Length: 145
Image 1 (cartoon, helix red, strand yellow):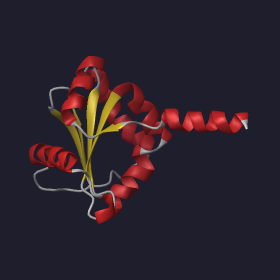
Image 2 (cartoon, helix red, strand yellow; image 1 turned 30 degrees about the vertical axis):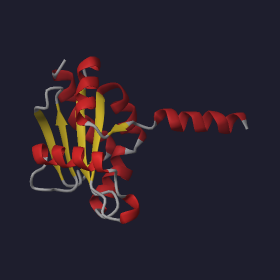
Image 3 (spheres, one colour; image 1 turned 90 degrees about the horizontal axis):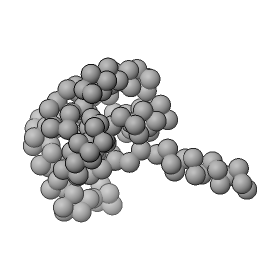
Image 4 (tube, one colour; image 1 turned 180 degrees about the vertical axis):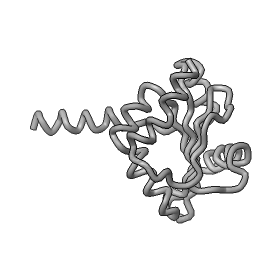
């Protein structure tokens, strides 16, 4: 039983926190001197979005890296009624899309600095391992310090 408790604690501690508010993310990024990764997703209808989340963004490799280097923001645009977001979150997501994803690409992932300047983007599913994805980010994160 003790082992199960440790495993559960480890699982919940290692899960990355995704914010829904870009303004809160910029505040945190400024305070902690981190970059921001924005992921535009259609969580319940976009196959490549689901694959990106499961294969890369929820991998222990990415989550362990993100914990120390990134502030994570997800702008989700679900279509199924049961997954609809509250009106305030929809408004925040739409405002973020107007600024960073006006063409409505899914998935679309951006690495931005604390001022919102785009440093790198991934259009669609990045066909690479979580390790390679982190390797794309790491030199940019190191250069920004």
